[in-house]
Image (cartoon, rainbow, N blue to C red; front, side, top):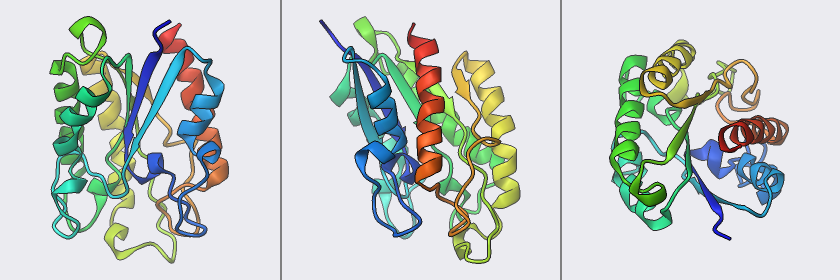
Length: 211
């Protein structure tokens, strides 16, 4: 029997960056691992998380490889046919080096969505279903990186923009901004307990979408 393919396209949250030790979390501690364990053998969950990935921006320090748009089509083509694409991007667009207002970050997500919708990488050449997830809210803790020092208020605006995008494009939507808390250690990433919580939230949503 053909498995249903779920592609998880994101940044360090999806990669599983652990703010406690700066290493990658174990597979079953990452939200994608929780999703995999919660689904049955009819599903194939593909992790495509990259630290520092933006929506559509070349990183002036880390280079064009961080641009989520550059890798998107090769990624979709590599894994097609894709039943569901889960997007969790926008966190790195908040960095000082990009100096982007929230509306421009939302436009970046819109570009990513339009590419997926036109990609013909779903079942029988259709578009994959899309689940859009908001980034968590930046916490202005004492040890917050200079790159995110002025990002808290911008991050607060993203859920509203993302919700409108989801409505406009008829996407599935999950707002984690009020349920998933970033670490007090760095104010940006989420710890293992929050990864597990996120995994269970996504699992519930995916089951609803794919039933």
